[in-house]
Image 1 (cartoon, rainbow, N blue to C red):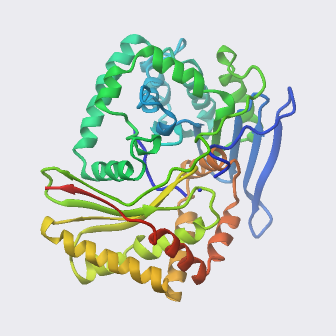
Image 2: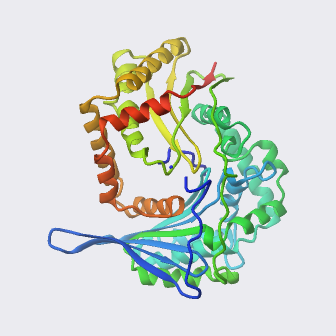
Image 3: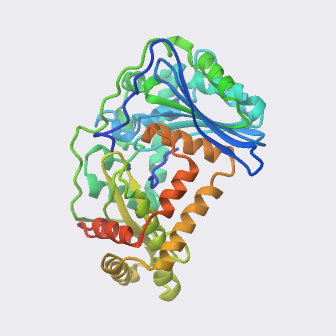
Length: 454
């Protein structure tokens, strides 16, 4: 599965570095403890770093009966060369195909037998394998995931068989207007650079990739210091750490001390220039994205950008939804987005409309962006934007899987896990002036226009 979605960020030029460790000993800290009005603990977040550099973050949720686990690897499509383009996604598929201890069927049966949910996804900067099971079945899920991640055999037959599956998947994405227009936007923004290439690779790169290339890529990037294991739900931190030590110790995977992780990018931020691109496809609609260079992942203005994005096109009360759909009836789907990476980012507006309405839609969107740059948003829009972000954050953390996702991604890409209250405080502290400043900054940049349709 491919995941290319707006994220919320630059530590130096790339990824967080492996933190210093005390040789031979694990380091454990409590990051957050939440209590109810009666003083009872409802949630506790703890973090352990093994001498090998493997990071384990758990959240114990009072009353939960399920547990979710994710193994996050700090490698994605932007870490590939032209000859290994698509290797991260290829590996995501192959790790389900078997190990020295389990066949592909064994892996499927193990989780199916306990009613577990099991999947994986690849993004531009990370890969994640995850499972959700009953609390008592968590040791099984840990063992299966640990076996897959550390002991995949990458059999030649499986490589060839899965190659055809991925080629079918690429063809499927070529038939999806949303995928085509987003890939075109990335190409306009970053060209042939790592961020500009589609996550799944191309037909040519997948057909040419050999098992030896995939195996070298696997050994280079699937290292403990480049991984985070996040677990949430009905969990005991100490027991989770023990289970992970047992499961991930196969083939000497946890032997040795952590090695420094090099920068993801070469130290130079990729610049985005204004460009326009069009692809002709026999679709019923025209899909258009009007974008510009955004913020990096660790930019402190990302909270103001989040409020701006919500007010602009984040819901049915947003400016774009009201003006484009409700008042003028120009399109069924319209939304804004903000995507952030280690050293670059994009903001934009995506619309699907009938071909004869494209020019009017673009005019309306450009007028709304100009108004926000000139005047910002209103006080009412500010409060609604904050409320939508905070409410969405809290409601999105009602189950163990969403909490696991939050922990894993935060630890991997930020090298820190902010408490829910701290995130809410940062959102609520955003001012009208900060929103207008970030609007002027991002939407005052050169325009990118991607259009796909008949």
